[in-house]
Length: 387
Image (spheres, rainbow, N blue to C red):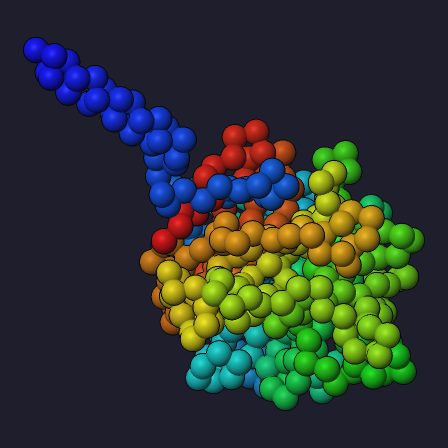
């Protein structure tokens, strides 16, 4: 009898210990928890994605090819997003069938508008493209790629995009009051340091913004406009007029790297700036695209896959990097995100807009289509699970 009681007592202690241990651990080992400074998680609406896909029969007369082109027949991806007269406008990169493979076709920007952020009406012709203008030499035949759009308090839209002439990619600037009629200003760094960076291969400009009275607008910091930019590393630049930008450099004149790829992580190959950066009470948040290195990356993720990360910078000193997520908050999950023109899969984030108290994130799906995901700060979804 005594031995039986001792056995039951020991069993009870072990059970309680096991229960106590499990109660202090996540019940789901794949749970991906975000810190309080980060945006998310983002939820993909059911039965909505992809929101923009290629169309075979929309034609446009190209003034440079001197022919009628099915301008969005091959791929539609990598979108910018903003608000215009209360509606969401997405400017998406569209490729024709003029070549084979990424970078060998011509890219133009299409225009799509939505009253709910999920269902779009599209213009039949592109609103931004290579033409017989001052930028022809820098934009033809590769085209105009990967836009990010921001807006000033008085309604001037500023677009950072990549000029691609199939020789050197250049980060360039254009402005508009209605998102359809654009003025091209040329390469962002053309005048800085006497033209030192004119021939620098550069992309992905993320201008600093802030939500003021429910509207996301461009913000000055320390008296200047500020932009994160870069594909392999994250750099910075400042401007007095939003058109001419000066890269932040070290004492020796080299570009100042704010953060870079990390071996063993999802962003081991590239850290490429995403949508416009956002000033918050906890600091400046930069959402970015991380590419996983095929050799020295995170083995849990597909080699060469793109997934999305977030980094935090000092609110008063935007070049001072504080921390970043160790896991992507958003990664390819659906079939059209995992396969397409980019065969290794990608969710390439470029457009994020504050709309009706929620954040709508627009992204390229495997360089082929456009998707949307929504973050409701009052009821945040879980971040994408760990693999």
